[in-house]
Length: 120
Image (tube, rainbow, N blue to C red; front, side):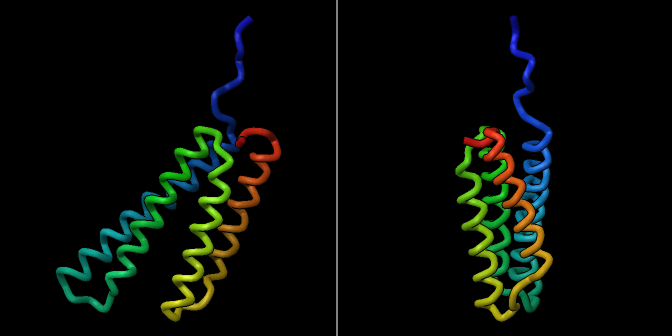
Protein backbone atom coordinates (compact mmCIF):
# COMPACT_ATOMS: atom_id res chain seq x y z
CA UNK A 1 0.00 0.00 0.00
CA UNK A 2 1.40 3.40 -0.96
CA UNK A 3 1.05 6.64 0.91
CA UNK A 4 -1.03 9.06 -1.17
CA UNK A 5 -0.70 11.99 1.22
CA UNK A 6 0.71 15.01 -0.61
CA UNK A 7 4.07 16.29 0.56
CA UNK A 8 2.64 19.72 1.25
CA UNK A 9 -0.90 20.73 2.16
CA UNK A 10 -2.78 23.60 0.58
CA UNK A 11 -2.44 25.46 3.89
CA UNK A 12 1.33 25.26 3.76
CA UNK A 13 1.28 26.32 0.12
CA UNK A 14 -0.82 29.41 0.93
CA UNK A 15 1.55 30.41 3.72
CA UNK A 16 4.57 29.79 1.48
CA UNK A 17 3.11 31.84 -1.37
CA UNK A 18 2.46 34.78 0.97
CA UNK A 19 5.94 34.53 2.44
CA UNK A 20 7.54 34.16 -0.99
CA UNK A 21 5.76 37.24 -2.35
CA UNK A 22 6.71 39.16 0.76
CA UNK A 23 10.32 37.99 0.48
CA UNK A 24 10.75 38.66 -3.23
CA UNK A 25 9.14 42.10 -2.97
CA UNK A 26 11.31 42.92 0.05
CA UNK A 27 14.49 42.07 -1.85
CA UNK A 28 13.29 44.01 -4.92
CA UNK A 29 12.39 47.08 -2.85
CA UNK A 30 15.70 46.84 -1.03
CA UNK A 31 17.48 46.87 -4.38
CA UNK A 32 15.42 49.82 -5.61
CA UNK A 33 16.16 51.77 -2.43
CA UNK A 34 19.87 50.97 -2.69
CA UNK A 35 19.93 52.04 -6.34
CA UNK A 36 18.11 55.28 -5.50
CA UNK A 37 20.43 55.95 -2.58
CA UNK A 38 23.65 55.41 -4.51
CA UNK A 39 22.72 56.82 -7.92
CA UNK A 40 20.35 59.71 -7.42
CA UNK A 41 20.98 60.90 -3.90
CA UNK A 42 17.25 60.60 -3.24
CA UNK A 43 16.02 61.18 0.26
CA UNK A 44 16.12 57.47 1.04
CA UNK A 45 18.28 56.19 3.82
CA UNK A 46 20.63 53.31 3.27
CA UNK A 47 19.12 51.67 6.35
CA UNK A 48 15.80 51.38 4.47
CA UNK A 49 17.53 49.52 1.64
CA UNK A 50 19.33 47.17 4.02
CA UNK A 51 16.23 46.59 6.12
CA UNK A 52 13.97 45.83 3.14
CA UNK A 53 16.49 43.42 1.64
CA UNK A 54 17.09 41.68 4.98
CA UNK A 55 13.36 41.41 5.68
CA UNK A 56 12.90 39.91 2.22
CA UNK A 57 15.62 37.34 2.80
CA UNK A 58 14.01 36.37 6.12
CA UNK A 59 10.73 35.88 4.24
CA UNK A 60 12.46 33.54 1.78
CA UNK A 61 14.04 31.60 4.66
CA UNK A 62 10.55 31.25 6.14
CA UNK A 63 9.33 29.74 2.84
CA UNK A 64 12.02 27.08 3.17
CA UNK A 65 11.04 26.40 6.79
CA UNK A 66 7.35 26.07 5.87
CA UNK A 67 8.07 23.57 3.13
CA UNK A 68 10.32 21.60 5.47
CA UNK A 69 7.49 21.59 8.03
CA UNK A 70 9.55 23.32 10.72
CA UNK A 71 7.72 25.06 13.54
CA UNK A 72 10.78 27.30 13.84
CA UNK A 73 9.08 29.43 11.17
CA UNK A 74 6.76 30.75 13.91
CA UNK A 75 9.66 32.15 15.94
CA UNK A 76 11.54 33.48 12.92
CA UNK A 77 8.45 35.23 11.54
CA UNK A 78 7.48 36.62 14.94
CA UNK A 79 10.97 38.05 15.49
CA UNK A 80 11.02 39.49 11.96
CA UNK A 81 7.66 41.17 12.51
CA UNK A 82 8.75 42.58 15.87
CA UNK A 83 11.96 43.83 14.21
CA UNK A 84 9.95 45.49 11.44
CA UNK A 85 7.66 47.20 13.91
CA UNK A 86 10.59 48.34 16.04
CA UNK A 87 12.44 49.68 12.99
CA UNK A 88 9.39 51.57 11.73
CA UNK A 89 8.83 53.11 15.15
CA UNK A 90 12.53 53.94 15.58
CA UNK A 91 12.72 55.85 12.29
CA UNK A 92 9.58 57.80 13.13
CA UNK A 93 7.01 56.10 10.93
CA UNK A 94 4.88 54.81 13.78
CA UNK A 95 3.02 51.54 13.65
CA UNK A 96 1.74 50.32 10.30
CA UNK A 97 -1.79 49.00 10.89
CA UNK A 98 -2.08 47.00 7.62
CA UNK A 99 1.26 45.36 8.41
CA UNK A 100 0.05 44.50 11.92
CA UNK A 101 -3.13 42.94 10.54
CA UNK A 102 -1.46 40.90 7.80
CA UNK A 103 1.35 39.78 10.09
CA UNK A 104 -1.14 38.77 12.76
CA UNK A 105 -3.15 36.79 10.22
CA UNK A 106 -0.03 35.05 8.92
CA UNK A 107 1.11 34.14 12.43
CA UNK A 108 -2.38 32.87 13.26
CA UNK A 109 -2.33 30.74 10.10
CA UNK A 110 1.08 29.34 11.01
CA UNK A 111 -0.26 28.46 14.48
CA UNK A 112 -3.18 26.63 12.82
CA UNK A 113 -0.71 24.66 10.71
CA UNK A 114 1.33 23.86 13.81
CA UNK A 115 -1.74 22.70 15.73
CA UNK A 116 -2.75 20.48 12.79
CA UNK A 117 0.65 18.85 13.01
CA UNK A 118 1.86 20.17 9.67
CA UNK A 119 4.68 22.08 11.38
CA UNK A 120 6.77 20.36 13.99
